[in-house]
Image (cartoon, rainbow, N blue to C red; front, side, top):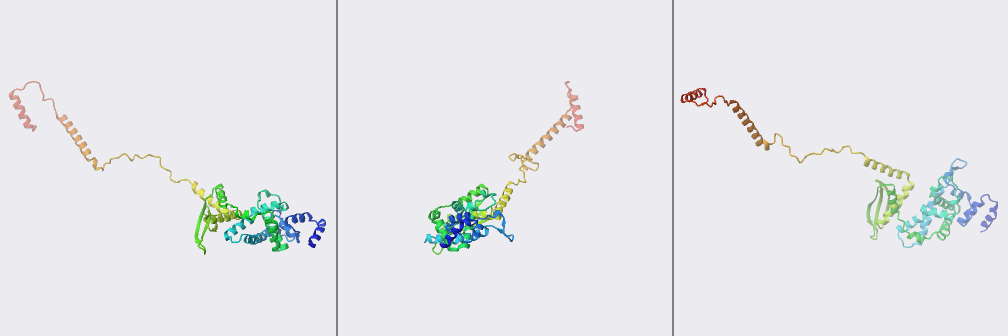
Length: 340
């Protein structure tokens, strides 16, 4: 108590009094070591370096604060919801420590106004406030210890700014969010059930995997298909945001699929219409033999008639009546020539 009074008396003479006053409003106490909090508010875009040339930003404190938050919120949720299953507790903790929630907290507390950055693209960096909140928790841990972090979360955050019960029972449909994202980006999505087992009480346990464009995403386990798919969708969404190699692999697979679908067909269909309904008779068709024989006979008859017409002589036809002697003589002559 005496230390805080002394700190307050010294504030007007301190160079960083405005920062310290702002932090007091947020934290509920004055920092011991100011450098931790300055670093927690320094975004990596500033490119500030220390005397040894090493970059100074809030990334390391963000890593530390993320781990501390998971432990503290896990402790709080565990005690607040006695008897609830692990899946419920995990889901509630995830809602409390997700970047969107922490970003809103940072904005409401006034923390985002204290962040030092280059100012480029800040409007598009929706995680800057949430990252700074995690870094702030890391700074509190280094400055005051674990118990101070627990008091900060309990008294300043959960008691004043967040209704933990509303957060716990509020349904966030991560599956719908993932489906919406895949539809906007025109990529294929599949929920593949890996296995279905039972726990020691005989309750069913489902394990699903998200597959996007044949690229394996994350898996989720739950006591229902919906719960497991929700968890798998949430983890996959986080992976899409944080893992550039994963999202690159998804769009590379999409490019390959669409390229294969758009490849031209090598064999062009024939436009000629075949008269398959017309029966064509060839020379080897035995069904044509009667007609061929008839035609052949007809041709021979025509040839014979022609020959007969050529042999038929009209010179011996006369209109003059013949005597008996002339008829006998003509008959003998014909017999002699072989005509009779």
